[in-house]
Image (cartoon, rainbow, N blue to C red; front, side, top):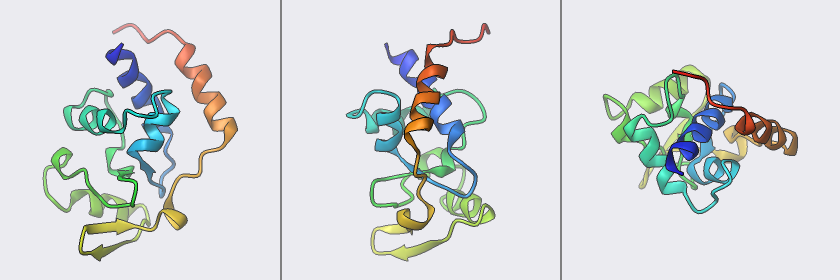
Length: 125
């Protein structure tokens, strides 16, 4: 069910620590759908993951800031990351984050906590 995927996606995105980034694929994997990285991008763009989702912390698999469609201005993602201490460099493909330095290295324990959170019933609207 797509609504459940987006609910899980919101939970995962809210867990990305300040000053770190995660990839679309990493989020899809943590949601239990490793082949749904494009759906993560779509869900962020359309606001389907709920409120208060730090979409600026999500980058592509090479660390490129590729979520411009989500933001009001083309450089807002870069500016929000800079406020958190995440450095970007300009490359021929666009602004890039060093995933080795700034990537969220989630643990097995993180995955288990997320799984437990997924099993909780969604809050009533």
